[in-house]
Image 1 (cartoon, rainbow, N blue to C red):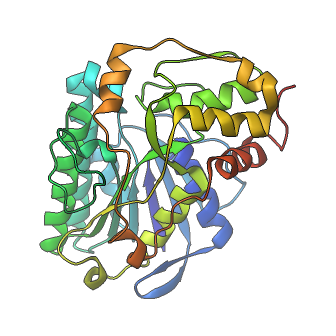
Image 2 (image 1 turned 90 degrees about the horizontal axis):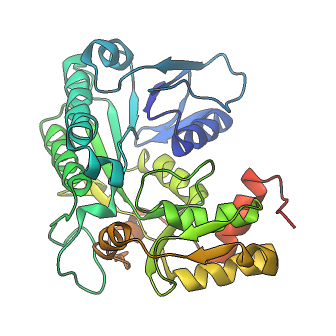
Image 3 (image 1 turned 90 degrees about the vertical axis):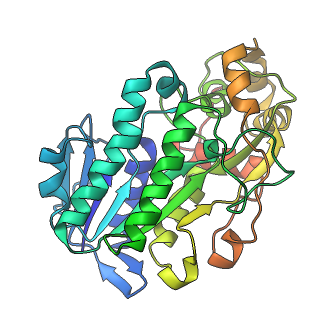
Amino acid sequence: MHILITGGAGFIGVRLARRLLSDNRLTTASGPQPISKLTLLDQVAATGLPNDPRIRIVAGNAADPALIGPLVADADVVYHLAAVVSVAAEHDFDLGMGVNLHGTLALLEACRKTGRKPLFIKASSAAVYGGPLPAAVGEETALFPQTSYGMQKVVGEHLVDDYSRKGFVDGRSLRLPTIVVRPGAPNLAASSFASSLVREPLMGRAYVCPVPPETPVCLLSVRRVVDSFVHAASLTPAALGHTRAIQLPGLTMTVAEMVGALGEIGGKAAVARLSFSPQAEIITIVKGWPVRFTTTRSAPLGFRADTSAKQIIADFVADELDGKVAP
């Protein structure tokens, strides 16, 4: 089996690659399949991977048909994670459209031209929702995104649905809640604050949070999102039914509750490094997102949420900080 991961240098892409290499196989609807080749495509070369002869690292534009055509030609599974994140897509409309919408279409077209019907698993987002919302949202909720990023994700989902209906790919679109705790430096995702308010203090750095403590958020851990991408490959088309979009479950809490969990892991010193200075642009975007998701579809399909913020933070310390936090 050949697996292609776009956005392969990103934190989810790298951790998904590590998981797949460790498992040595991916279970699809046809059963466990040994992994013979793993290609990671991104604008920059992926790092932090084991020395494994099955890995091929490619640096380039995931929206370039000339580049992606040969990569997709013999791919059995495509994980499409490449994206321009929310604030960046809002600031640069052309860039967001080029990568998030036209890039997805180019990749689906490359898959169609192979005639092989690869498994196509796409990262979508809870940003597809917007406007007046019910207490909990799910696949039955009408989609009225309030950002260009959200619109691009909605169109991408519809493309995956239609290319699956036509038999060009066997698609799934996973709507992600806010993923925490992202390693590395803060980025231009509006949700970046949820990781930064944990990561920076634990690493001994001050952080100014752009949303107030009472802000509600819905979280999914890095471990759990990787589990979800692996699990999605095992589902049958019949189990998915009328839509290939799946809203992943999340754990809802306020920023203040996250800070409480931070204190349990990092102590008073970590909490003291955190301060608040609200930023209107970030608050507006975040307020447009739902904070509770239904599990009427995801739970029967086998997707799981995290159990606590404390466990999410403890896993981050174990996975990314070698079990140590700054004093």
